[in-house]
Length: 318
Image 1 (cartoon, one colour):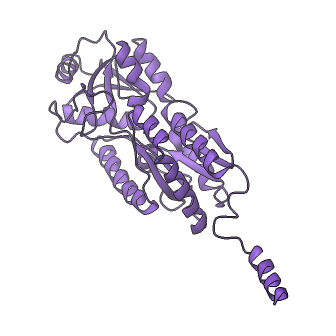
Image 2: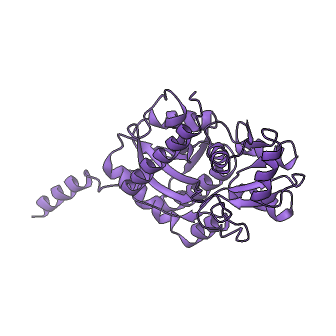
């Protein structure tokens, strides 16, 4: 009897329980930016996940080409769960902005979870701009069509989409000045070299509170919790204006289901930890932690949203 028990024990020892053989080495988060909100969110989730699963999460920022470089790295990586992508709205925008991508966004990557949403972006102007409201900005632009500039984090970035949607809905002609990322664009707004921008709340909130920029509107359908005195663009007459940024995690498409489930369950647990949730909320973000299926449906709708903006604004494809 003892021999039978011993043999069974050896057999069971050779069959690891689901998830127990993963992870056995560090996990890499490939980020679409090397600074700013994406980096902050990536490090917050990565550090907490490191503590939870007792394996190091390495942050690897790969900025460039509006997130395409980072996305391509993960799409072509070994689907073993050790390489994940932290991306933003650019993931949903790129299919409409480029004639050909080196990957298929929905076929080559598997959604893990929607980490958080930002509710919207903040329409800000440099204090030298003689406009104290959205209405005054539109009137100023119509008096000087094409002379008021707006900066973005690059062609095809959500900050670019917000500017083009504003031009369409307001009948404005703000002139687009694209940068390589959000940081230099905002620096030029702070310096008065560019008049307008649509940055995220995390990035711009300190500058709004210090008076270095003036906040005129919010692009979400509800006011920002961290800037509650700033009206939505919907409130001030641009009915239905709704652009909100988000942060989501992806894996290569062929990742084993049990590994995907392990990652999802632990990352969602991290997102819902009180300390993590409170930090995200202090940045003006709303913690989510969706299922992969919910995130996929969210992505499909977001891809169509930006396809419509690109189409109706006649933005040329690269």
